[in-house]
Image (cartoon, rainbow, N blue to C red; front, side, top):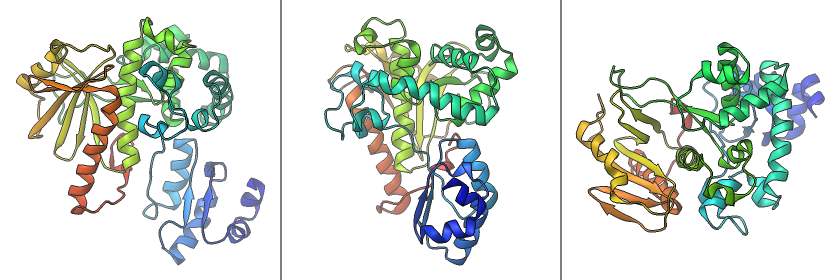
Length: 367
């Protein structure tokens, strides 16, 4: 089929009819220019869906030929609420973190490690070679595991490169591969304008905590109970859930974290329109009021340059009860997706006068 599409694009498109889904379309990038002619003749929306596992390659082919004729949506691994739609979903927090959200695992009930192990080796070998022509795949896989160990930390390319035995520039290029392949992403510090008070370096997170646990060598959910990086895994889950729920809802949003030179740090800031959530992630099942102290300090000091009239402050934690203390909401991990969906529904309703409409998530600057 790929040879047919490359050798005879017009004949190939004629054979598929008026509506089609083209998967891995970046492998025949010239197809986009022939689609342009068909779309110009009949601009009815939704006739063609183009998908691909390589963000950069796909966007290059689409942006050159289909600019102004296409909408872009990121399809990330399933959120926790989406995983719950499968039969026999994870029942507790550690199982949910360990299993992650890749749909094949839950749909076909493939043992988690049996699916993730070849996914890492085969996907990396196939797509990494095509993206950056990486010659030493062993070094890249070592880099990938070292990056997983730094989830939730500020990105230090020099230190990461030194530990992996590569240069700073190579580490920077390989981080871009993780982003292009939808494996990891960098969470930027939130600042409406640059300030000497705020930290400028981003943090590194993985889109899927199942993959993150696999790269960390966590082979059973019970290992998370005493694992020294349990908090980082949970924080990665809280942040990635925000990107999944809001991206899949199709609303424009901004996310980031706050950290100033005095040491005040808030794990996550989520903004949709005039609404903002300030979020701390705590993996423990017991959350005491003192866990909200950082959020109270943020309320007193404020975010430099922020024009948001009010901010909901919340601690997402590993427990099961929802309560409020000193204007800080304590949200059980199971209800985090519900809070995000309510935020998305409010933004969508405000933008459309109450009618739901799909919005282009590429308006988010990190999309």
